[in-house]
Structures are given as structure tokens and as C-alpha cells.
Image 1 (tube, rainbow, N blue to C red):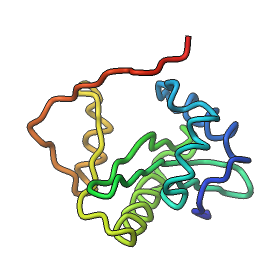
Image 2 (cartoon, rainbow, N blue to C red):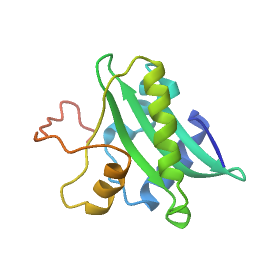
Image 3 (cartoon, rainbow, N blue to C red):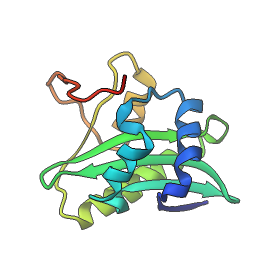
Image 4 (cartoon, rainbow, N blue to C red):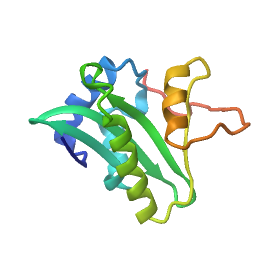
Length: 139
């Protein structure tokens, strides 16, 4: 298995992976939005490949203060092989290299399995609630 930085040629395969893994996509996952994200910190969007097949992905972002983790996904047929852990370890190293002190992520309250995965990686639950507002939506 190889972990490397995402390239736009990976876009369709990553979207297919996200859908197979059951992630909910939004306008911020469009090709144009991902191209814009890559202008800021391309080294924080990672993919895992095995025999030239994309089997995992995670998108990280650093705003200069905090790091954020988005859309960690492993192909359902490849889950249980430590791929998610390896992707997160590499993302953490890359976050550290850009000066990030704390990584944050969001997990739906009813997603117990994913919450347990992140707890094993050392993430702890913060007593906050999430708020959001779409200011630019695709019709």
C-alpha cells in the first residue's frame, strides 16, 4: 500500500470511494471546490492506493490555527486492514510539519463505530455543538 498526496486526476475515484463508504457529499466536494482547496494546502489531502487502485482517502485542512479532518474513507472491501489508521497517522505528521497544534473533526452523534475508531487514535470528545450556515449553495 502507498500513501501519497491527492491529485486532481484522482477526483472521480475519490468521489466514488466516498459514495461507496456512505459519506454524504455537499457542494464543497465539487471539482471546483476541491481545486480551490488544493490551492491552500495540497499536501493535506491524502489517498491510499494498492496495486494502482484507490482504496482510501482523507482530506485535511489547516487554517493557520487548527487542523481539520474531512471525509476519511476506506473502501468497504479494504476496511479492517489499518488503512484508516495509516492515513490518519500520515495526516497527523503532515499537520505537525505545517505547524498545527490541534486537529479537529466532526462525527455524527449516532455514528458510534466511527467515534470509537477516532477515540482509539487519541481523539477525545469536546463539549461543544456544531453550527453551520450555507452561504453559497448549488441549486
